[in-house]
Image (cartoon, rainbow, N blue to C red; front, side):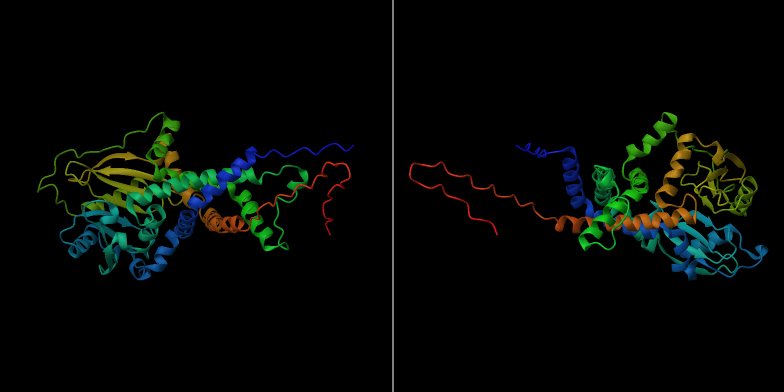
Length: 402
């Protein structure tokens, strides 16, 4: 007699992972779609902003000596919002770019901006920072335009996405060598159902490392404990942010030094002669020094920033903190943003991040098609067993199956 077939177990680890993958995908799909699509746009924020706001940000380049001083540009911007104090000045290294001045109290998005032509002093544009295109896209990306509630939702969905990526790799993993041959390529000439599954699973496998890198770094903005974990693993604890104070309290006399911010700007270029954007941040308190941050755009890895502090009354240099002297935790933390946006190695990684984010946006769609296209397993009816014969009665036979 032939040996009976072994019954497949009704419940396996892979089936459990499949259920987890299914329900987490259905729960987070819409949020993942929105976050991924907005992420595609934010990858090229630096390149697209001067295109969208060309009239505000691009000017005709002229000789360096014809530029207005930083102090004069700040005064022009101040006239546009007399009641709002200047908080920060962004100075671009390119000769054909305008100067951006930010004013107001409170958080950055609650402030106003003014773009000024550094050669003519003409105001090119102004408004609320929160109303700018990329501010809105960032708000949608991080908070779903819903504030703290949106932050909770995106944080949970991002956590789910990490689990989805890992569980997807488990589901994709082939059971044998024959199955492995079909898991590394897409059968483009197959049915819609097959092609859809291949796009979801095969591309998912190839992009899994990048998807995890983008989603895990995204958790840094959702959860403070994830942010602190970086410092704990690197340094043992999170270092305190340096607070540099002025040598003497500001008075009406020493707070009006002519050309103070122009001298601060020029001094920063001498301390850090590399090419890059410069941000001059004015102190919110009279006792705190002026902080100037300059980004090294000549570095192979992006987001390398060095800081120098100046006395807010005299303009004297007080302290420097070049990128090379940052703690290990701070250096790792500065890598989070370029890894998340793909800007870490410039255009090549930006293009990669764009397509990975675009694929991430497709996952909820292809996953939904897989869910809707599943066929319920039809249980086969057990064949009728011959009835026990009674004396003089023929046994009932099942009808023949055609």
